[in-house]
Length: 136
Image (cartoon, rainbow, N blue to C red; front, side, top):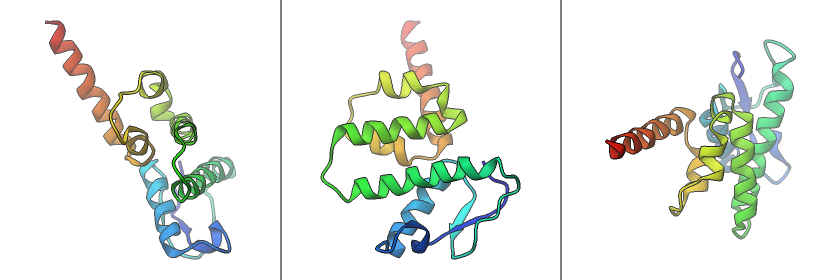
């Protein structure tokens, strides 16, 4: 993750992007642990190793915004959720629990895509604690 604040605005996204699109991208990146805010400044990274990681996360967030504007396709959101988990080093180790054995509740994929990493990790702990308690 980055150590310097990065700014996102609609011009970073596309010619047709709105301030609402930029806010959504900022929210998605923040949920994934990036230090970002709304604004129009050139991206500056503490180290060049951060740039490709951020660009990948940024493109993922833009793809989420675009997918949310189209009719719902389960495969698209499964893929976006999988990308989010794989890009996040804290979630990556739980990919199987989060995606292969995912719960069947409505909105799960959207929750997984947009929830802060800490919320997802806490949820996993609660699920495991409930399973352990039911074994006793």
